[in-house]
Amino acid sequence: MTEVMIRLAEHLPAPELTVVDDGGARRTHFVDEWGLLQVLRTALQEHVVQGQHYFPPELLGGDLVNCSVWWRPPAPQIVTVEVEKRKQRMLTIPLPGLVLGIGKSSLRLVAVKGQDRPEFDGELFLAPFPNIGTGSVCMGSGDKVNSEMVLNPEAAWEALWSSAFTDHSISGQSRKYPYDVRELLFELDGQASFPQDDLVPIDTCLEDFIRE
Image 1 (cartoon, one colour):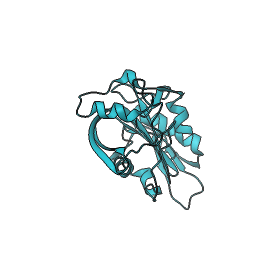
Image 2 (tube, rainbow, N blue to C red):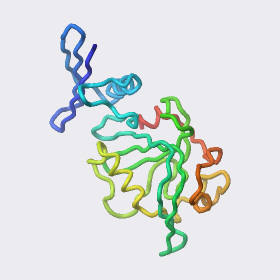
Image 3 (spheres, rainbow, N blue to C red):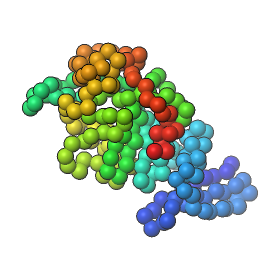
Image 4 (cartoon, rainbow, N blue to C red):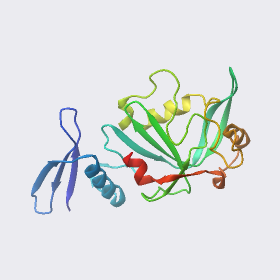
């Protein structure tokens, strides 16, 4: 079986890719971000196992140095939403599938339909939250996102959910409540499932989102 190994380090000029074929011949070379994405794409689709480690199914792509992209299947989530200035509500919302892009100092968030891991040509939708326009997440003041989160998506999700969603950028993310998506979140508090027909599509696919 052909082995594919990827080494990332700050002293390397680019990700280092090593391929060992069935005969034991080893080839090592550097790859750019797009080349690495193709390797990751193949490995993710075929679930390539390397020793005791494997690419988790939640990892969708990215160069894993400057950025990574992760999928979160539909699940309930506790979020804090600002009702008015200095007044907040804590809600338990049944969220749709989400795709989180993690950079060294920023987050991007979009939604996907269905229960399954999204395909690379799959349609994306606006994340149904305030503070998010066409994907970029406004985290407010403070250094809440850092480079270590690129390989630590749990920390990135925690940073997102621990921040209150405010009254900024509240329009356009819901079909039912086009002027204030918070109304949708208030309505969904304690409900069992997210109304996927309410999601608003955006003009990009997952592969383009990964390459941005």
